[in-house]
Image (cartoon, rainbow, N blue to C red; front, side):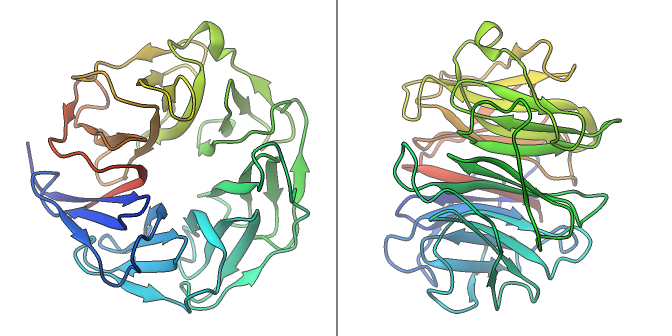
Length: 322
């Protein structure tokens, strides 16, 4: 196993854990994260290989050395609790943050200052307070941005976040857990929910369900990741419920028509909450369960290893090359 990359994990109450050597050793970062910080979003900079942004209930933070050291970005209290972060791939000074209560904020100066964008998002829902689970910027046209809201569906902007449209054509389940884009031809958007996954091949105007109840071993759809060098390959995490007692990692190579359950070395102890990829190595994927287990594949899912250490409740993961 090559130890030429670093991993970071965002946790509920334990801030950020960092490994400089592919998961062999770990450090919990206390500074500059306030006590009991919940870090729910981690994202790699698209042009600076060692830069990572983190967001949660205590603001936005950045590391310039792969996660070894962190600093606060912007003022404490400038944003509500952050659940998702995205960096503009064309102009990385532009960041988007999705929050709870549901809102989308934009920064044009690398996270130092933020403006709340004009969206008409739900203020209440069946889970109490809605929140933005995903923000996705089109890698080919950075004026196109999508946001998934739990529970209020998917929104799209065609002008870099200035104005937004609620996308409703066929997306009958508004309980959005994750949204991702695949640069296929035509491009495809995927959105996962509590009991289904939807796909759109017209930039979100219309959606079709993939009928995962008949194709997946467990029905609860969560994290999504497109293979970095093959947009026709999609990975997904699933489970029984939000806090179910087991989970799986799944892969499709035909846009969700069929799925295979990938061979993890042990049965995960909870829903597989998320997956992390990076263009530096398209075959390396980090998957994590909600309750602290981490799995890594170096061959695009054919085989996996389990990280020996467990971490409590994990909400986000990222890896970057050293």
